[in-house]
Image (cartoon, rainbow, N blue to C red; front, side, top):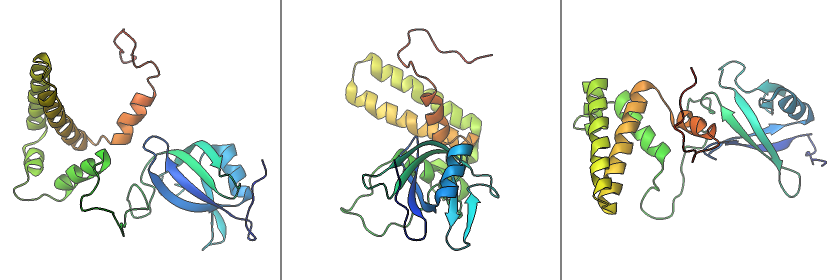
Length: 211
């Protein structure tokens, strides 16, 4: 396949999280940076402002391991799916795309990442009267106690074969588990990556951690 670079020898690149499919950034590559990316397995771009190559994460450490590179139908744009080692944006945000300028409807669509970010925000910027902030103030023992209680509630609801109640209790458990994750510094990509390593998820033998 012959890619179509523009008159400056560049091709636009959409960088996407391999696990979540979130768009992380838009950058440019020339033939040299593309060759380096494929050879080294980590993203290397061409900076139009500095007129030079730059390997993502060479100063910040937030490298992006390349999984796939796909060209569009006209071969003049690329999508690069990556597993990132840290935030993609120089501001420290997970993605460069966080300034929403339009949304249809009145409600913000739910996402696990948005919930996680909200929970994390209650830890980094405590809010008076917030139950989440209360849990962080009480510490890990309290958080683990709530996780245990919610696990029991899920079991009880499931045993009653009450779908509505079970869904309600699973949601409670998911929330408290995410509070625990934030407290321990575990991110959603960590869980996604672990699940992705388990190719046979319906194996009857319990999966055990390798010693």
